[in-house]
Image (cartoon, rainbow, N blue to C red; front, side, top):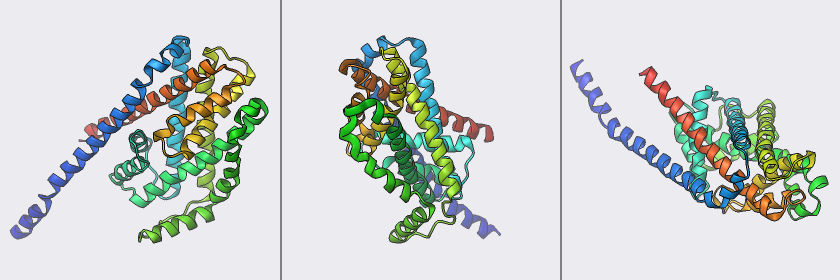
Length: 320
């Protein structure tokens, strides 16, 4: 028995430096991501200061709250996909994995968010392939629902100002077909075979796709509300401006994702948003609206990540 005890002690010893390295890597990722996120906010402050000066504190606060609601809806969409694939997570754990991982989008390079979510999810018993599958599935759901919102709101109200982006319509039937569970599961199985990984234990179901799509549309509604408040503060009110705000943000996000060269769609979204808002705002106020929107969304990312990390930290301390 003594020998067994010694052997166990020897086996456990190397885990400490490995755990410390993992902890340092994660804190390093968080510091870099927060640094880039803070830079994204601070770097635009001079450009948006005048625009924010025209907004009342109530409108700014309302816009931030709407963005926080949209980000929570995005987390719920991802959580629904992950649960459908076999890994349901409590809200607090899901918030930590999703929001902290999403800070990686501010670091140049497209893989940081998924890598972060895979590592954070692994601590909660989520297999890495399942985390990766849920992460990548959020984007076709977002794209399909976002293009749908743009199609329903822009053509009759924005007119020729957005015709240059009509090619996005070609993606909609492709995305809808690709989100059929048979297609999704076939593609996931094929990809895992190429990577020499075991197949997913549970395939995606139609219910999982529909629930995630419902959360995605909820998110677009909240994002549209946040932009509508900014647009109203800059002088464009009424049903047309309100409706255009929903389509403008959806169009801008979809283009920012398709043009993957720019980190988090930097620059691309603003150009598309200004074009979509052209019927109700002159160029100067439209640019201010786009930049204010970008800053509010970045601020929302930081708030959600900080809140999720703090909540998870408190839970860990209370359990200890």
